[in-house]
Length: 271
Image (cartoon, rainbow, N blue to C red):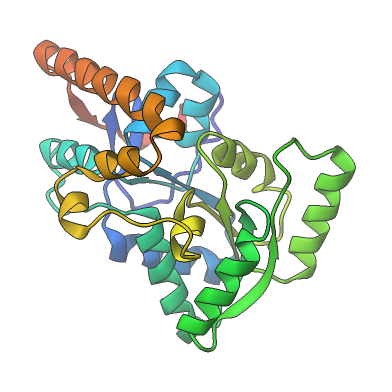
């Protein structure tokens, strides 16, 4: 395996079914991203729940993309609970929409410039307009809604030129898993912006296009049920196949006595 693991120093990780997850809370995540921007150190952030864990079990290249991320945030209460089992009692859910909003609010003081990449036609522009109205003084460097088809090499180079020309500090990537993780891993060393964060459906939520689950459902690990009820045709496979499979694998790991473990730095670098 390659030794190009680039996890942020000082952030412990714990193993969840072979995927290293950062033992963090929202405040730590925002502070870490601030540090990367200030020091201009390139990293990408994977915001990962049960879906990301299960996809990574099926795809070794995706697991390695997560392993090389600066942070893999626990987006979902099952990962938070497993973090507590691993001995990290401070771990809290770092949910994509919450992380995005917290970073945007923080940037009003730091003057960070944001680029919004992703979403359906017109979504990034609608998102930028809505957030700018909510957060006066927000610095929007630019927006880009990619087509559903893969970009040609020429189109991809033009996108890189557009993002670099905007002097963005953070690129918020609103694609779906695993598309956004692959895009970030491929572009983190090609863009001048030091930080890329894959936030998935946060674009639609903050643009006002899709409803978010009530807080009590999020806190109790039931957001998946709310999303399944609102988008059954798109999400039934993700939740009705992945969730039972996750429970099965977690139960097997628990019965074998290797449910979760710490990920020492030496192991992290070898992933």
